Image (cartoon, rainbow, N blue to C red; front, side, top):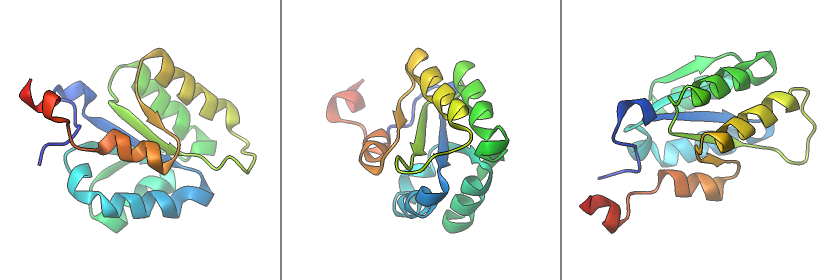
Length: 137
């Protein structure tokens, strides 16, 4: 099955991040889509990476937790053009002490034209299989 994984190696990394209130949702999403995610190199912040890796048995490189700088570490990888897409499930109903780092990650994704999904509907779009036109290229 062909996935949306970019062809060139530098853009084959998918970053996985989730606020505490959304970690279960992201983990379930990854379990459901393991067959697609196995085609990506996965990275994530702290406990999110650990939970996804344990649930899917896929390797997920773990950075620091978000409040400890993990969001900033992933933003740096995006800025270096090493990340193809980011799934960052936000909890819009809670305040987070590291909001500036979250905003930085979103801004860097926008500056570098890297797709970022902040909810499950958008995450589905990021990982869906290529369209027929893309497969013909």
